[in-house]
Length: 460
Image (cartoon, rainbow, N blue to C red; front, side, top):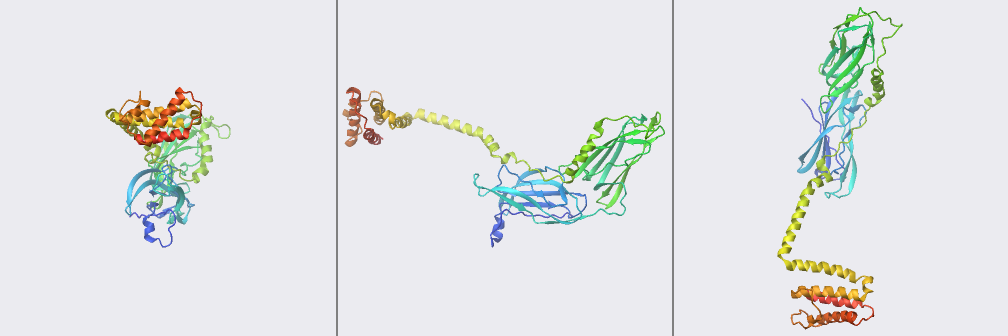
């Protein structure tokens, strides 16, 4: 019966006396699921880590790390999927990581999962960032040593269940000194990256070259492996009639016993004269046969301590630029529809269109009138004032702005009286003095703009 342990990692520290309320308001936590708590040295076991988050930054997706010495993950970059779940009536985004781990040290351990999480302090997307270190409660694990009783001397170091073993040769008939390729395959539920090549290092009547190996995995958690070895063997005597049998020994976690798998012997016909050992070596094989083994030695420290899990890339659905890219066509369409509707409305309401045009013209002209360069030129200054006056008078009296001049003061339809009419008359007088009397007196900008503002307010 499978047992499950769920470890809750709380972000932050609850205030004293917070109690259940603080627990219910947690913004992020982790649940860890482990199948077994008593395993053998070298045994691989599955681990499921679920990261619950509310306000995780879209660009940050931390992967919980197994930091306890004596354990390592089976793969560097675990696969994950994203889902939505409710926990204590709170909606969480859940990232589920499925991977495996291998025990590398005997004894009782309390394994811990840790990570750093960067969150926002509020639901506001532009809220302040805060990084919090989280660690799980210890999970008790007991790693048993492999039994010494009944352990064969040719034990490969593989620990698993129901492993399969296959061997085949490339040729059945060769000459002395000709290379023969020996292919060995091991597969099953086990961590095979540390498994050594099956068979002895020396065979009677053969020259053996170092083996090359390749490991593949049959599942996403790297718990089921397939490892192949390629070895060059060279027969040295014509009296060799077979390739000797090869034994593969592993420890079966199901039966708790050492299991020996055997393949061969394989019939072989060898012709040619014998090659004396110590007098001459068989033909030199390409150096590439030696390089993989040399590289394997250099990679050995990395295999024993592969490091931490690489951070998984954030899903596209959590990245702002991706969401913005999906929304941009709709936004562009809405903007175009809004612009078109506005144009149709203005075509059907010319009075509104005229008011908008006059407002834009007034703002532009007023900015120019307040500049020192314009006020230094009386003719240009008063010409700007008259443009604003004519446009506002025309809009108020529903007449074209062109042609409106001083005679408008005699019009009974003029919607001005008292001080407002006098302000308009002063504006016309100053304009005519500049235009027709060639007066060179400086512009009284403050008084003129005050009269202009009075007239515009009265005509609204």
